[in-house]
Length: 330
Ligand code: SAM
Ligand code: SF4
Image 1 (cartoon, helix red, strand yellow):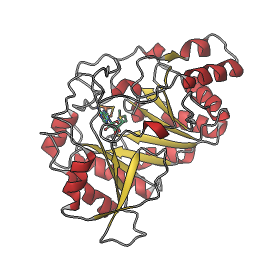
Image 2 (cartoon, helix red, strand yellow):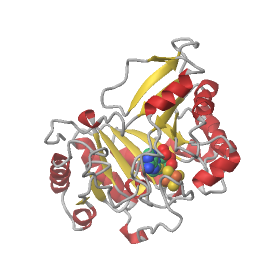
Image 3 (spheres, helix red, strand yellow):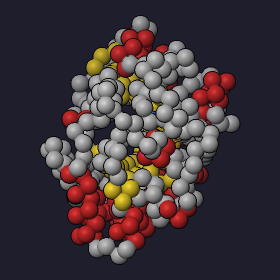
């Protein structure tokens, strides 16, 4: 699948639920409304959409949400994808519900790797940011369990918000060293359900990197896939083959739209060619109306063709999409 700007789609992100047990301040307001259950794609619909996308060149599927581990049939989704496709299956989670048993079941079903979000190591602040009863200790336990179960490479994600956790860049970077994983800092994007994003709360990747480098000098890895969202660095004081890395995802200060290889499907079956699309393509209707695989493939090809050249966050006419991140799938 190629869009009208010559970009090839290789990565599909499927939100399998818009529900979440957290209400992160930069993502979901406490009173956010969820889609009706019957509006959400079923396990079979998710698997079929992914298989058709694979026939069009998709090589990776990341399951997201909302919180995908809340889905009662997550193992079936993973197993269905593993049977129907050869795509790499990844999952992103807030890690509040991970257990050795669930991780093992997902791995046995075909899950390849995990990304875990952690924004603060301070319990009080973690609670304020996520508006949940979980804790950093719980998340870190999930990181260790994921490593133990071989769901590697495990990656960690953090969003720094000024006035909340912008003083934790170094402490979070230390996680990369302690666990031997990649810790990625994502710039806060205007995708919060409160529509409260403003540049005064935003922390640039450059500022985060400078804070880390004051303690741990970094060296660019220089081997990033051009379509990857992250620019990765290793620690100058560690061996070159250490898996500890820091990554910066800078959609606001350094957009990577020109090399974007992603397509998204929301939990209610809308195709979004861009995270910031204001137009959606309703895949659920043809899926439920008996469309053939060829018709669905044509639908995905047509939707992809409309992928916008960039998100334009910093342009004066930028319009924040109606859907927050939790309803799109990050
Ligand atoms: N609930 C899971 C989690 O938090 O990992 C998966 C879904 S969440 C929407 C996926 C990723 O999007 C998380 O790493 C989260 O930090 C990020 N995210 C959510 N809202 C964001 C925003 N406004 N700007 C930047 N990243 C955001
Ligand atoms: Fe839930 Fe993830 Fe959004 Fe936090 S970032 S509210 S964990 S979907």
